[in-house]
Image 1 (cartoon, each protein chain N blue to C red):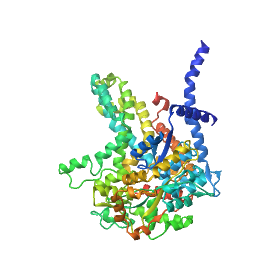
Image 2: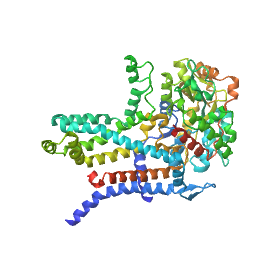
Image 3: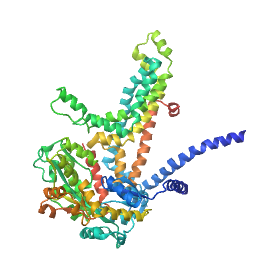
Image 4: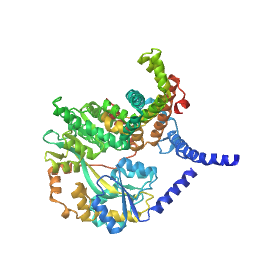
Length: 352
Length: 285
């Protein structure tokens, strides 16, 4: 073990010598660091930005493996922070005095602070938000209004979703149940999810594939190979620009609302740079560029005036007032639920 | 002189030993230690065999392993059946002038990464893909057929990925086979199947064995191809390990699976060697 320590130290020494300029290592989702903004930031601050694309599960696993080192800033969803932090201690408390909080929508900042609170300290600041729901080709699947369309025999072979926890939660809502209310009751939650797993297995023959890559899904929908999919709202809106038949539909049992955040890993080397990036990305102009480009909602206060009119149109087209009230925001995930869900998802994938 | 000789020995031995120890032995010890622990209700780590027990008790876990192993064996067999004629043609039928060129041709697809090759196949096979386009144009089908996301396309992808690792050992052992042996068998009146079974196969058996071991292990440990081409039914054992580590945060269970994969695949190879009466050191020489 000592030997490995020496070798890693040597390797680190070599890398830190070869990289003389200041760098910011960003662990984020695809699309969260648009090229134009990265270049602008590099020009403004002289900090090189290295971007690694990932998802919630991999972010946690990567930071857990290195005990919170290797990256200067991560962007997990707000519901996946508190239990992970309590268990593996991979983030450092956020110093909100270093963030220009007047740039952030106040209610969202409060919500994220509360949801990422571990032992009196909060670990994240909001960056963007969005929902998961249905992306539908309304011509081919006019009646797809709720998640159960993903099990509808009418759309056989034209259905796609991710085999991840949001799908299980969405299906539970579609059954009329409330999985979030059962978060604290492991037995009830297991029973509910096992039922959902059985439904997914029974309707598996209808599914074309389980998508893993957002771009690949958009490609399938563009070609008409998939007509009903569970996906993020921005994907549906991006497709709508190219083909007005395709749009995001807020499901009647409620779109699933998420907020993605900034969180600083415990052993981040360039903490100052991380705060600079946070403030830079939440500047109204930059945040608006991100939203115009990627169609995700932004947590930036005052970005509205820089938004293109079609962004607002997208939102109003897909969400009625009732739909907005019906958005199910993810509460923090308690520990242990992930392994229960993991086993059910394995069963679904293995079933024939 | 003996001193200098010993120095050279150490000089060349040290990197090998360091490699073995640091990159193989230590991580495996670590993996083994993790796999022998479970988290109790208080969140503390305690020693236990529960992770291994879970593999044998949960049908889905060992069924996935059995499925993966059977498909890996099938892939190995198919790879041999497809590559043997190619290797034979290159070494025994083609004139030496061209055989080098054709060997290079076999290598060309492997200059790009596996991911790119798999995406290439996906473009060909998908519903709006190249094959369907031509079939529709020729009027052979009326509606496009989905050729991806089933076990056949998955096995095809796996065979394609592993062909190189079978064809190279086959070519090198066929090159060692003296043509006069085959001619002599003809002179003595042997038929083609007999020559194949009694002369060619026994001679190149070590090549077949080493090729098969490599192909079997690579297929068993593959992650990309089953995931991308097999689609919805293709839970591969490696994916299950990935899921335990990444999605379920259960590193202990994942480590146990990793260890079981190592032990069980070693056992399958040992069994294969015993059944074909082969010797590992001879196969690898």
